[in-house]
Amino acid sequence: MEGFKASSITDQIYIKVNRIRTLQMTDKKMVDESEEDEFVAIVNYSIIGLIQLEKGLANDFNENKEEILGLYDKYASEAKALMERKIMITVKHGGI
Image 1 (cartoon, rainbow, N blue to C red):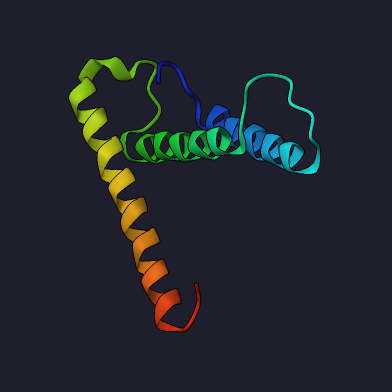
Image 2 (cartoon, rainbow, N blue to C red; image 1 turned 30 degrees about the vertical axis):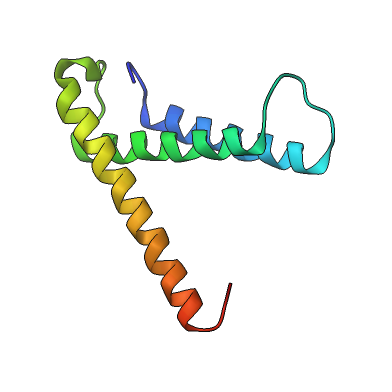
């Protein structure tokens, strides 16, 4: 995560969203890629963005790897919990 600026994170998410759209609209693949890989990358970049919001922009996140990995796990868990709550609400209201 060295040297990511806030704008570079949002740029990467934008690029991934556009790539997913292209994959969905055409059968052409330039390299070994999948929609799933692109969605995983979006989640990853989003978590990096959340860490930057909490820690501020840094030139080097290697200073305290344990803290950064802890924050990564925290935000991944929060995202999973949110998804689980939304699924429960949807099921409760007759969806899925």
